Image 1 (tube, rainbow, N blue to C red):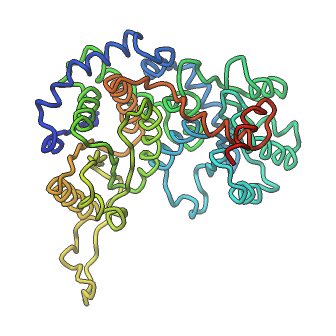
Image 2 (image 1 turned 90 degrees about the horizontal axis):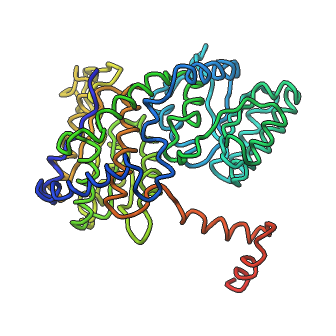
Image 3 (image 1 turned 60 degrees about the vertical axis):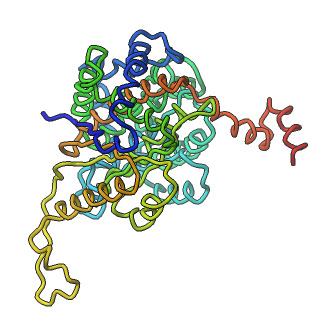
Length: 446
């Protein structure tokens, strides 16, 4: 099967191939640190060989639990950050976006909770679930992260009210720590089915663990193809693959060369509306991994051609601190052509008979040429098709490149100390026990 590909030729107007190649030794050093476990954050490298280590028994177990949850019309995935973004990215990319409108829908509705503290959002979700048997996949290593913990407390009680406490246990699955934490304690006490979040895999790298695989399987997507694609990319970006042939190393080196050349913002663009949440997942992966120590490329994302009518002007003519990475899908699943019209009032008969994808591809090419001419370097990633296999490849490619890129930048790609700052303030403002000193300090500021 064809593999995803990387093209950096249009990135070299601002950054030459010589500048990219100058990062070869640093990229190779990052690769060595990853595979040797000698870099900062090496306790969180469990994702590195994860695709090739997932066994048949684990996949069978996940699929069996998913089959039980698929008995429900709605399954709520509770989690925040990496605990839901990877799932949502895959589900939105690969499932029929209009399946809800069809009778005899194949797959359960996948709803999400615990990724915000919106009272209206959670209240409306509860109203939709009232008197229904629904499934819950609660994803939290500790069980005490504020957003998912609130959602789980509310939804667990609602499900127990709807179908009874004993029956509810059959439709609640906890994905959590192996031995510790509030969710593990509750799951053991209540007898919930559980899966383990590996200690050495951080949330933003966890889509190929049960964190992502279970809800993705519930959504009716082949987790075997997802894993197979990731495993093939694991080989294709291995430490034994030379720099010039290793797309993860080349991507990491190119973006760092552009950063050194003053390009501080990377815009991930797509021309396929189903890939919106891949951009959201990518933003967390790179933003949380690299944005520290006063360093880091700022990750942004856009959906073209939609956002060409809102952000296009800034990208074309704004400050030249940006570069684009475009994800392109070579062959869409559907085949739909523009029809002819006798009156041609809209002037579109020149497109009659052309596939919608051909029009889209010309918009993509025209945008690439305009942006490059406008001083925006362009990196292009091409997926042969939008399917589970190639999404698996794409996710592992981005993860591997992220680790290498973080080490080139000189940061720890696997921690996120800055995330805790707002939590301390929030806990103090809410008078959480143990935050009395912080509360006094905040009162003095206010």
